[in-house]
Image 1 (spheres, one colour):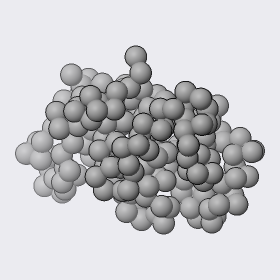
Image 2 (cartoon, rainbow, N blue to C red):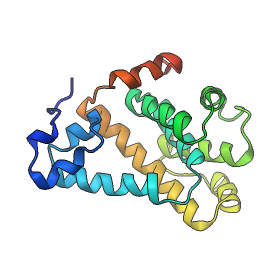
Image 3 (cartoon, helix red, strand yellow):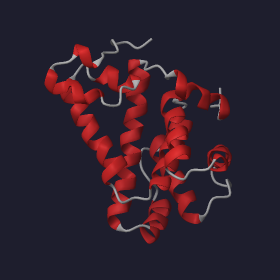
Length: 184
């Protein structure tokens, strides 16, 4: 159970009700601070709807962050979103496990592998290495490169928010953890 109450639109002032147009448990917890929920949604909305970064690459990076940090919420949500909406295959998700355990070797093309490596480096070392950055810099334009780095950083923060607030995985996402289990 979350450490803060899950609110509904009925609990909010009229000007804040739109914050729950997608009433997932994370949003229902964040609206305990409508201003913060709005700010969080602005960056999250840009990442999902405004960035020109290839959505499949974005989702690979987010799934990698969720897997490496063992965040059931983030991992389950983005496995589902990635597969259902953004061109990630089931084999991609399984290959992320292999790629993580072998620090490469998941069978991904060079750009995909560099994106996953960048996510791992930002989670474990707090920064992308020079070697990984050099690959990304030759494969992505500057806007997409910056968007990728900010996306990974944002989701590194999201997993910490989820863990600290003890946000529950919704039932319709929990089945994705059975399909793609996180390591113990």
